[in-house]
Image (cartoon, rainbow, N blue to C red; front, side):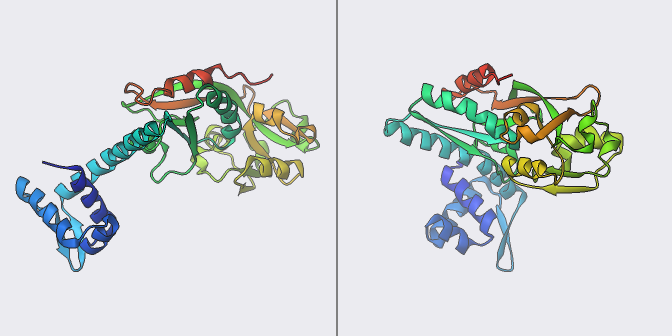
Length: 297
């Protein structure tokens, strides 16, 4: 029978490559670890690894167990954390993953009423993932994924929570400020400032420039929305952001924005969630609050 400890051991061997380091990471003796896994190998008459020098290399059976461990162990840890918090008198924690840098400001408008409605629930927001947001959601590392670019898989549902327009932002004395809308070719001599994300995940490239065979003079990346807007306000370049975010920015008196293309670049922000029944009891409530959040006109 495969037990949780077996999964922890095989995962540790996969991570560390040697029996000694795996045992250290699990705070068990090497002999105890070896004995446990030999019993498992014997029960299935299958080797789980083979030695290559001092390194342990997993067999196909071992790799299958690693895949299982990476799916199941986070679920164990999540439920245990929930139970501990319940024992402390708290309902739990809602873990939200973000794949949309500028959407943090919008998320704050949802988190505030959620915390008020659920005083015993904490919220944790994560922007960095080892293997991507979708895998983090599928593997129970997060409970919700905020993304403008949903990747549809069987186990995940997506709920649209915000429709918005992506616009080109510039200083109000920029030469393009007088245009009714922006054409891709007009950005050929511009410095484009964006978040540090792959260009195929940036709407200004994937949804506007690249399909038209156009590009920019220079592409610079900056981590925070505030600094991006300050750079644009100082005339150091242009950027593409949701229209509502620009309108709320404190630099808005020196900035202007124009539609990307004659029809504009329309986007929808989604919350991804697992299709199973909500195990923590407040994912659905957060989604409902998100859908009800209205941005000021």
